[in-house]
Length: 152
Image 1 (cartoon, rainbow, N blue to C red):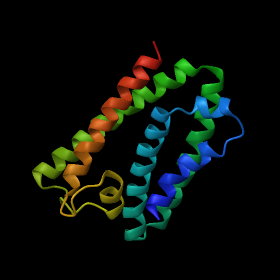
Image 2 (image 1 turned 90 degrees about the horizontal axis):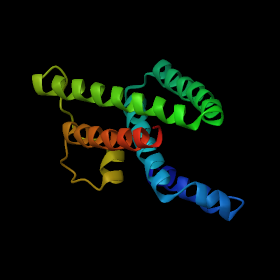
Image 3 (image 1 turned 180 degrees about the vertical axis):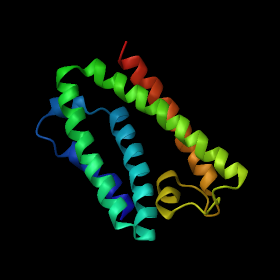
Image 4 (image 1 turned 135 degrees about the vertical axis):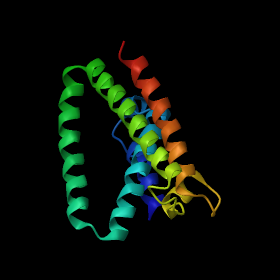
């Protein structure tokens, strides 16, 4: 299921109406989108496995609200939109760092990595959650730099 969802990003781009649209969604943007989608899928898979339906609905509602906000913001000011994402990536790095600190202190259990993360990043089967969160934190740092560059 996860490979199908992640590959659908490429299918959407491949089936777009024009070459111009394909050029707008470059390989780098597709990779960023796939990364963000994989983070969402990992988070949702742990929520689904714990059967927290209210939290699942809240995540979906917030994603929808943010999409609408960001779409309008990007139409009005692409530079400001990139600045907002730059700030959000910085906050994500801070949150992931706190999460890693909690794992190190033993406040959060360092569980085995979800299958979706193992498939997406082609990780060894014995990978633990701390390894994945460290990788996600590095990705977020890279995304922050890209958005900072795009919003001078």
